[in-house]
Amino acid sequence: MVEQDLRSSQASSPLVTARFVVALGVVIMMRSTHLVVALLASVLLVVSFCHARDQETPDLLLPSQGDGEEVGKKKPWPCCDMCICTRSNPPQCRCNDVLVGGCHRNCKSCVCTKSIPPYCRCTDVIYEDCGKRCHPEE
Image (cartoon, rainbow, N blue to C red; front, side, top):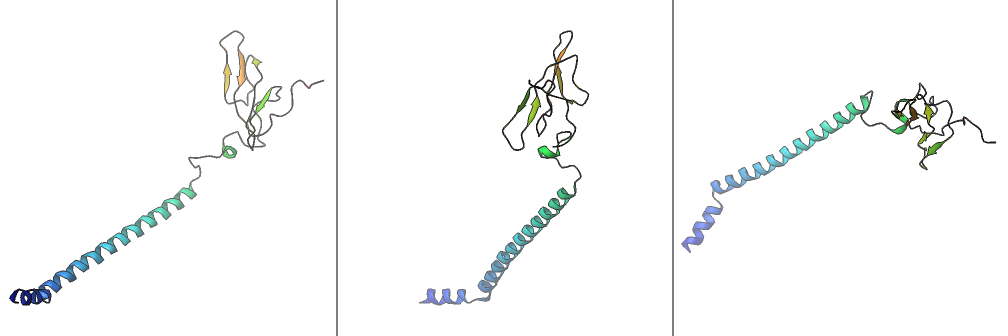
């Protein structure tokens, strides 16, 4: 009986109530801290997204945004007899013609043999048909 009275007096003592209130305050403070951190993280995400949209030259380019590879741009060759294209949309095409002495001046990536005279092939990829043929079929 004495132990039961002691427990009931401890349960209702101001010290136990104060400990509970302090513990509850810490829990509430921890929750509010998490909310503040989440709010700051979301603000940082929005700011970084807005900054990325303002960049003049993004790091990742679509094929239609590549340098010299846009549809309708000047082709790296004046004509092509052996055009090889993928079946993608838009098609990725390159001219497989071999030229003696060098590639056309518009070609950005010219691969040549070390023979004399050099045999060269333009390896540029364009995103449309290669254009007119050099030697039309009869």
